[in-house]
Image (tube, rainbow, N blue to C red; front, side, top):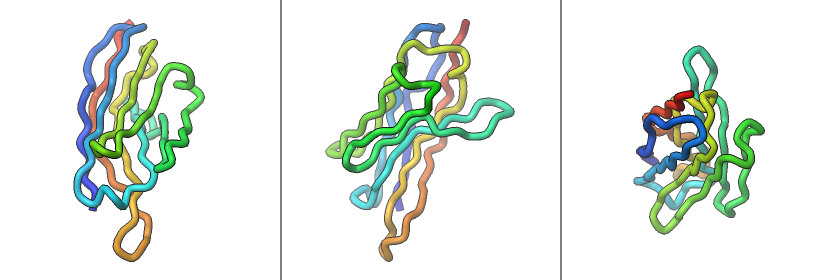
Length: 120
């Protein structure tokens, strides 16, 4: 199993920047795709960005050009650099990892979430 722990959230003014980190442990060699999701109050969880093991990336339209996802496989860490933050980016941000189990079946692991609040 893969365990994920996020850090780096906080309170920032609009236009500011934050960098989220997600440390993975456990069966990290089995990880395929990693991603960041977010959930604002009263809304469903939504994809923010994904990165594959080959480092191909995918972003939600709302964050393209402002957020950058990256991963350091040597450190088993996923990052999300968030620039030009807007109040609409306020949410709990979750790290996710899609990994293979011992029978090559895919499963999803989630972190506990980190709060990002952007003030206007």
